[in-house]
Length: 591
Ligand SMILES: Cc1cc2nc3c(=O)[nH]c(=O)nc-3n(C[C@H](O)[C@H](O)[C@H](O)COP(=O)(O)OP(=O)(O)OC[C@H]3O[C@@H](n4cnc5c(N)ncnc54)[C@H](O)[C@@H]3O)c2cc1C
Picture (cartoon, rainbow, N blue to C red):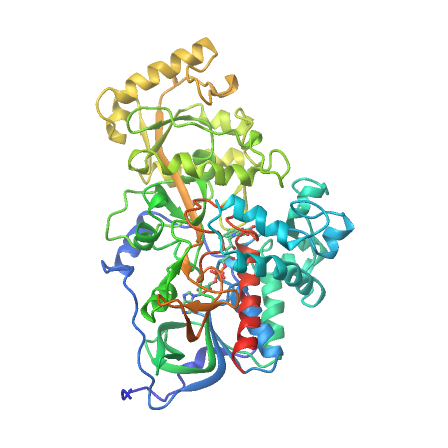
């Protein structure tokens, strides 16, 4: 065995005994120029898709547990709670200084029925009474028959149990989404009702799941789970064909080895914030992807570690993403990560301005009020968020330009489009509302001054700034203005409604490159219904488990935007359900 030189100092100084020490702080609004510089420094050119090979076991381990869990999103904390409650020694490892990952920002859980709350409404999806079999058939139909039915069936059975557990044992207070009142189909979305738990409203993000996650984590710790924060897993340890632990590094660069005698579980998120992995595994959306919607995670390292240990990949070209991003700058191949997303972008990226591709052709805008997935109320905007991904993804070079003029301030504040209403506020620092009147000022300051939204006195000048071939934008704007004057769109298919036909006649003129914002990937390590990671030879890799979104395949193959939020349980609840399934799988297979 390889000899390792591990510092025996207390590398694990970062170990914290109680969840209370992890009061969450909201992260700040992203900045652009500085962010870009930092991004380049932190992400030197490398093959950010390369498999990360496992390392050999040390002569002596620094710590030992039954199960090592990597990542403290919904899946990580759920698995830790379940496994430690079941009598296992669990070590839970988190790279960041706080627990929760992207999961702590989630607002909705998606629900198919089978829970008390749904039974009270006599509601189930696709129809009442609740039947997991029907759910699998419905979703697989949506996934164009590419889903793994065994995995989907396990998901359909497990979801209601997780919701009930969160409510009854962990103290979550859910209600059907307030967006639609208590109509039956709104039961599909469970809103974490912080007003029912004032202490939850005061914690961390205020509207997110961090309070609930804190409860789950506390319960896990009460059952003996040891939490290590500011500790990054850098490699899997493999001995005699079995994954037996992990190699970690703390913030000071000290390395150590932690043994998982029964299993290592990867619940470390997907690769939505790794541009190179997106290009390789989700190429259909990669060119039009302009930002990442989260503030941590999404870097895909644990997926690369799994591949290094021989894992297969599932869910190629499947990703959770929305429209509404604005390209902050032209990324280069050196940029591995995206600059973060800026909430104000949604009002530029998600509205029916004059939308053109680089050939000067109109890019259709789908009126999200007319989009109906059968399980959602009419007008529910999230469906539209996902629907618009496809037309954005297929434009030449992944480029769609939104063109508007100085009247945009008025349009936004009076909700002239009426399709994606200016919400009355947008989020500045996370979940800190900013009045819409201030929105334009914010946009000017953050986007126009940094050059990501171009501003010009003439259309000719804007054309040049946006890099259109000479004459294309000028001609398209003339055609647009004629249609506006006539009050009727000249497009035969998906014509704009008359109120959207706002002429471009009041300089300055603006142009933004709009595109897709990535959330989480549905592509990841191939797993079976016990969440065992499957090798390219088709067998479970001994000792290795993964939860969504490090695991992939829950949305089938080549499902660009999936359903709204990508899967049977959206994105957030999916993480918890995956953690639960992995805990079940470990309990069943690793005695
Ligand atoms: C603002 C916002 C709102 C959202 N709202 C919703 C919603 O309403 N409904 C919905 O369904 N979805 C929503 N989502 C998406 C959803 O919350 C996430 O996609 C999902 O919760 C991710 O879960 P996860 O466990 O896969 O990853 P995460 O929650 O990100 O957890 C992974 C953790 O692993 C850690 N990690 C990664 N690599 C390592 C390593 N090498 N070593 C140690 N630790 C590591 C990360 O730091 C992270 O903490 C939202 C996301 C955001 C950002």
